[in-house]
Image 1 (cartoon, rainbow, N blue to C red):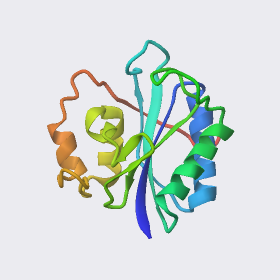
Image 2: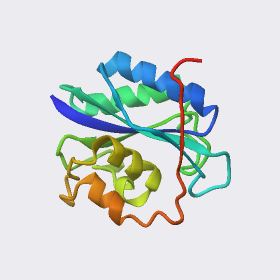
Image 3: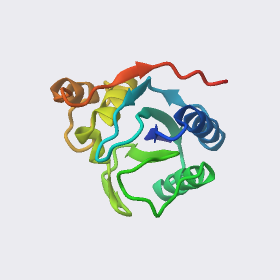
Length: 164
């Protein structure tokens, strides 16, 4: 079994789409471990605030199978593939970490470089797996967060009831 971490983000009816993603992720991968949810301003464009979190699960599926399942969940929740990279999202599921593997998957490196670039990825990952080590730097996520300059990256914890 491989421990997998996935970032979840939405700024279009985010409570609805994050709830939906959690239900579908649990249906596909089983028991999920959840970080807190954070509200933050969008990066790279002006728009509604995002809600972001990280989930973890264990799976014996290949990285390609996991990525395929994440894409299908995004598509089922209205994700448009032809939109600008930085823009509103019904649902964004990013495969952040796949065990201790370092590799290229499509257009992205695994572990995702967003981990060390964006507070909305690193903070919930640190909350969920602070004692785990980043496969490239070898530092724990807690160490990476303590070194992160979060002055321009305000995160506000928000409750996200899983039922309406």
